[in-house]
Length: 264
Length: 66
Image 1: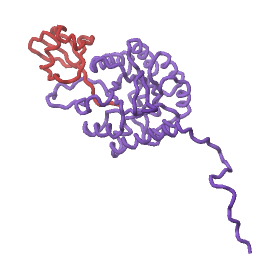
Image 2: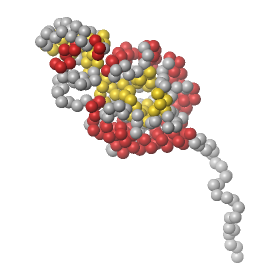
Image 3: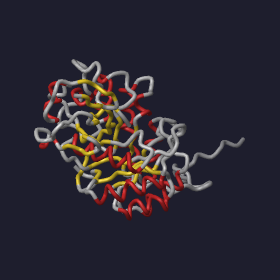
């Protein structure tokens, strides 16, 4: 299949990556992921619930085996040390799986990334052989430094995690896309289908979202909408849109052969 | 023996190795990772990693997240 998304040397058919948090239940999670057509899904790493353990289902039990590439994240980590520790555990948990999402947050109220700690963690993780997809701000200098460190994908936020505000600064996003030799995926802040389409039209290689689907009135329907939006935006980008002009006196219909007005 | 698991101290009958915790904590068949006193114990080493009174463990699994 043409136009695949290639991350760390592996090709994926879908350019839509989806999170597994915030759904009503595991069944809805599985249905939404299926409707989205995604190949890569994020998971968080947390302490196992030991109290009421017996019979309690596990997320991985509900996802079809081998259908998705799991992308463990470092949600809830506020230091490089915690993020590194979390991903080392994730690698062990998933049998030496190397593709990971690094996110180090700086504020529990707004969840904005702490880019200093992110840079520190990225250096260590890349050196340990992880393929790091890194969540970051839309600062193009930080994005460049993360790429130079060796991250396999750069994932700037469109707006704050869970905000649904869409792409607040398409210009910074364009700067990052223009300078990056690794894939750039928008991660965080997508709210509806047009946001995802716009991201792809700007030239993003993919879009990662969770809340936009899980918090929709009908998550399964929204997952399908997002699938279409990412495909449409990508096709529009590849089709090279027409230029924008303030005005253009070139109508779409021919000028010749217009019937003249009847005069007495 | 007393072990601190995921932050909680618990009493256990004497257990020799990390692997012995798997049936006790009903972890069989699940994908999980274990840290013993701050060090990850690879699955291949579960049968060799010795448990002692007062050890602290973190046991994690994959859950939903974005």
